[in-house]
Length: 551
Image (cartoon, rainbow, N blue to C red; front, side, top):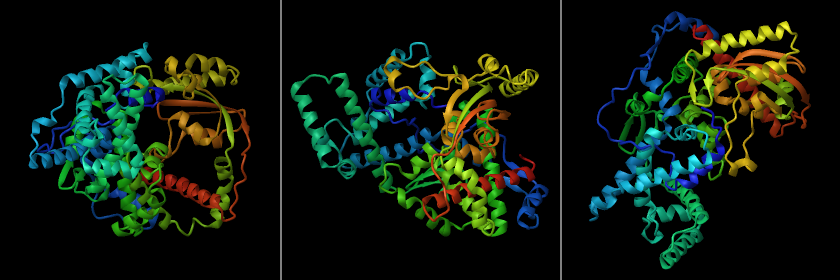
């Protein structure tokens, strides 16, 4: 779902003081949950593999490739259940800390969460949403901001328990690891400030005003992030992408969090489109690993770990860490997804090393000049949507109907020679802008204006269309690049299938690149090379899928 309610996200973060964005769960539930099937294991025949292996000059393998059901479940967990997975990790941290204090003489009842306080906090947040968005359903607003209404109560319970255990209101009661984490992250003066503020509130005996409460909530959220990072560093936390057994999504010290258990908590939210993408990811990555293994270019664990550590090193102790880059900028569902993509692309780079030379970079420079030099295209787009934005749900038979509507719009454009473009955009384009609360009017996010996007560079256009580095790898292409690079100025293009339906575009005008991109050994040379590798890798991956009969 598009994260279009950015203003509300900030409101929720401040008004729901204990909000983590984590749904709760119990990390040590016994046995695998009986989650609905995701279609069973995926089997790719020896014949299909033989066609794929021809790409690298290798014979067909002796056995078919079987992708276990748990791999598809894991992709869904990382896409839809990252909050639930993170919550189970937090449960381990909480249980470990509470057990340690009980052994030291504490009474376990001290760590009970007050139900009335939980309900009050939930109602406070829901009421604020109602005031901010009086015309929208509260649950829709919550879901649009990644908060599942069905898990809101357990989410709030876990958040309040975390505060009791690790961040009580009185800083003098913080456990040593909390104090150490905050001092390391924010400095001793922050601890002193919060201690003084707490003592002042107690002495005055008066509740904080709204502005003070919001400020404290924001700081507490930042401190909570620092504590979680410290807990991560003090624990041995391994993800599935770091070599766990099949069916294990996460290991926290000696506690295994099973993929099926987490999947069971999100199964009722999985749509056919979610399942299609998860199966596509599992198929594509498994096929690529198989072909690179056959070619001898897939990095072994030690080689990959060293390469990834070197890749991550510049992001250490940086506010824009690698997890932020992978998930927020490149839009990979998880750092595990990003790691696997990085490994596969490294294998491709080794496979095609002789072709990725200076001459290839010179051939790629024209595209790079437009992209990296920040050429701007003024575009208008008609979206025939399979997705109902006002309700946040996929339409029944939405894709089939969207395809038919796209054909009808194209026929009307052809009949009128494109002269009816504006009329058809107004009548048919399904881009939707949610209502803005008055408080957000002056800091409104970019509006789609029904598809009249105006001048945008390539990355801005991709963001407006809900496309990303991840989606371009997964789908093997993008509406963004087809429109930005391939459609001449003044002409129409499409229809293309994209994230939410079918897209027809008009390039009204272009502004040439502002910056000259050269291969003179500077920063741009590496950026050109990386873009070239990415484009060629995506094309190779799509050809692998096609040869396997899946694309």
